[in-house]
Image (cartoon, helix red, strand yellow):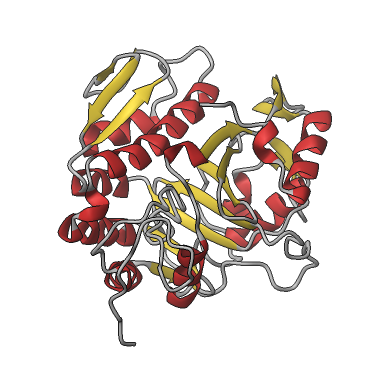
Amino acid sequence: MAIHSVRIHPHGHSGRWLHITMTLASVVMLVAAVAFGATAIYAGSVAGTFDSHVTRLPHALPTAVPRPPASPTGAVNILLLGSDSRGAPTSIGATAESDQRSDTMLLVHIDADRRNVYVMSIMRDLWVPIPGNGTAKINAALAWGGTPLTVQTVEQLLQVRIDHIAILDFAGLKSITNAIGGVDVDSPVAFTTVKSPHYTFVKGMNHLDGDQALAYARERYAFPTADYQRVADQQALLLGFATTLIHRSVLTDPAALLAFARATGSAVSVDSSFDLPSMLALAASMRLSGASAIHTFTLPTAGTATSADGQSIVNVDPAALARVRAALADDTLSQFAPGR
């Protein structure tokens, strides 16, 4: 397929002026984190670089079960999974059982007018019905039925259609971070990682290289609230990538942007329907005004508990879940995202 260069202009109103978005590379980690126009960037080349390195999963979405309809508002929902092992299309992208469990689960909701992106963390130990398997921790769905069962489980939980799925190899965080010269993260708390090497992070701004970013994203043993703090730190890391890309002018440096697209593509697997034309179309529609247009929050829960068989679990908050479902349906997630 021929890749044509497209000049990007800031805040262009015509579809022909593509907005550079992290749909090209962060449709997996910061999907649509940046829709800020940057002149003289070749969007087609960037997209082509990402596309030539990404792994596509041919059977990633469920096909033989009833699914929610597409959003009537035109919003887009992408499920992002973080895994310690990338896996092959015959494992994580299929219905067969595997040893994969999704340590990180994020719903990325791109609103209908494309001016805001909401990233909702779903606790990995959330105790939910998994179709055909009874009730269990939500991250078990990937091991029992690959991405199709994971998508089906999340769709049943949230009553919203998942348009695409992306899986980020945690180890790939290192190369992605190093490709942009490190990432600046505003950490909500100070902590030192429990496992060696013992990295120390201050409350407030930290500059992280690849190894530090991976350790920051994975740490949970250092916190009394364990996974609750870890997902908050992962959200801070995501926002850190968005602001770092802007403030370090990566978007206006073709070589740096191509390196970022290459590293991200190499760390990501996506469903086969999320092809290059789809990515470019989504990129062209984005109208984000800045990093403040990216909002993060965690699906509200009813706290931790112990299951009948002795597992440490996180309980669903039915009332809060009902409000999230309604907000997803009518595109009003702003009520859940704290202002920044």
